[in-house]
Image (cartoon, rainbow, N blue to C red):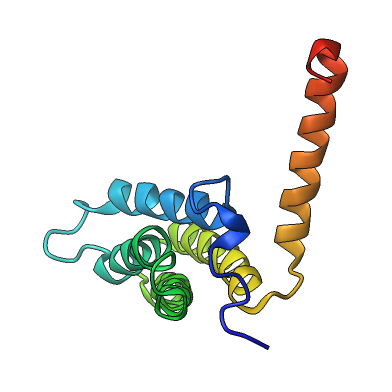
Length: 141
């Protein structure tokens, strides 16, 4: 088995990937909490999300092994950071950990080439959307 399983995830880094959307949501939820406690910002969560995005967007294409490792570490850092940071409340922790797990799901799928449940649901939702568009606009078929 080669690592990563895909030299470029799905052949398009900027295609709809739940890795990207999940980490964007992590950044949004962290930004909402950033100034609540002076000098106690969610730096681990935010830094991990930025690291994962950097690995996906800037590194994976040119150095697939390093990019995959940075993505996996970034998503795992979001999950761990969300689990250990207690000052922002349980709802924030749950959201951040969930978004981190969603990102980790996609990173695992592309790095190891294994089937993951959220990846399957994502593909099924896109297929339903495509069928709906074709059904509503027969001229596109």
